[in-house]
Image (cartoon, rainbow, N blue to C red):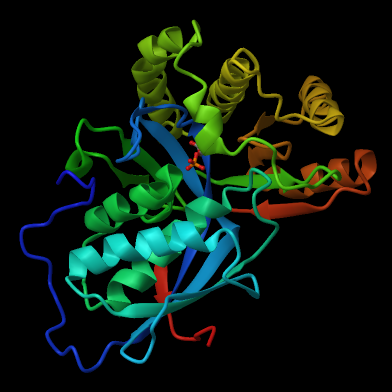
Length: 347
Ligand code: PMV
């Protein structure tokens, strides 16, 4: 790592043919963490306080096209059809990291489309920075390895590093930039689950971003307790996925989500990500379990709730959602592959 916090690589593969910068498009999935990333040991490099484990989601994703061009005097960033919005600055900062790696100074055109609502705890920053890292690095003539792409994505948004590898993924926290990246621990079809995201109706841009939420952990007396036991929890969860022990896996995932929110609730100032509907759904999940449907929830930094069931029970759970929450939108996901290049460009 260098003093600017950018990833240094001994000799990246650079496309010497600087006449021909390609237009490249990538799709990256969002991911949902079973063991959450919350808090950093290095703010600039986005080194997490702890490791985390997630799965990529098949139906929540970002598609991004990038092209560097000699005729551009400024970067042009279009996010969900909006040109140079306030989110563009973070994209441009990430382009600077890519330009630094590729040793180029050309400006770029970037267009990006999300499959669903942004900034409501649906981790669009994860899919967004993973897609930008893959499309942007290739468009700049780099051919980064999966590990290098994960490291690059992490610097845009921590959880984005987990949207690069396939299926079930672990982010190794690491102590320096080169050691903090995600790896696939099981392929998508290893553990047959479904993740149904139920969107609460009061959808607004979330009040406290995960970045600023995480900054409030430093004085939280419960945070060191969390860090103390998290390695054991990660290892236990991985064993349960390996053994395909769904109910024990679900119990850990649900209690982990509540632990994250316990930290958020007891931060200064406190953060309440839940809406009344979030809590209503949590209670319904417990009812359903009592009645024999094995379903568990997890929640990120927002009000939406992710319901996890065995794949065979997907239709049964959908029927329950329709019955009890008929006005809520929901997105059915299965474990998916990670970031990949596609041919159809956005411009
Ligand atoms: O990647 P960020 O900075 O948006 O943080 C993500 C934090 C959580 O979604 C709450 C947890 C996680 O591990 O994804």
